[in-house]
Image: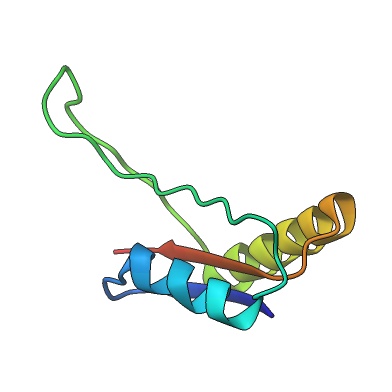
Length: 82
């Protein structure tokens, strides 16, 4: 399983991880990273600009590199914008 998506809607990280686990039952482990914007604590603003025709191919290139480098049985790369 290899899936790379650029999203504008919310998604459930736990459900995506479970979906990957179901698709790759032979995997010895699953790792995930979920980032979020933090409020307060001195953060006054966050501005992130993306250009979809470059963002998605960049994500796909990173997924290819990770799969090749680490011999992954499957991966899901999701990035939410908006």
